[in-house]
Length: 180
Image (cartoon, rainbow, N blue to C red):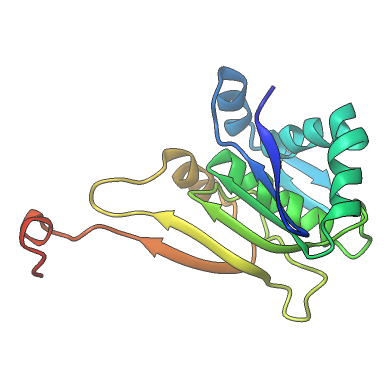
């Protein structure tokens, strides 16, 4: 099974989704057909991966009841790469206006998360439809996440959350001397 964990600090909780870590995840990454989930049209591979979590008995019997009962200070959704896509879809579903899990996601944070939907996922619990939190991504002369880049080239979009670009200096001399 893919890693998903809940961390708690006081009455605040984090639902954390792991990135690609096995062959089945790679297959999910390359399954871009449309998939309808909780009122949104998402990348089928990502949607089915999240659906597997939400249909699992541990989600229904352990995680969901724990989050409802113990996380009155807020639930935060986080993930990296594939996990960022899952965290984004999870947040959009939780905040789709019907409270399907009995709580809303207060904040969304992703690092190198793949774009999960044809239209930006929105927070229907917020008047501006944006999620509090941030989407961190790296794209510079030396590195970028290929799954994230592929999803963008296929027309998928990121959720409505503030984006923060992480980058390196443009020249080796900037790394060595700190000068630009």
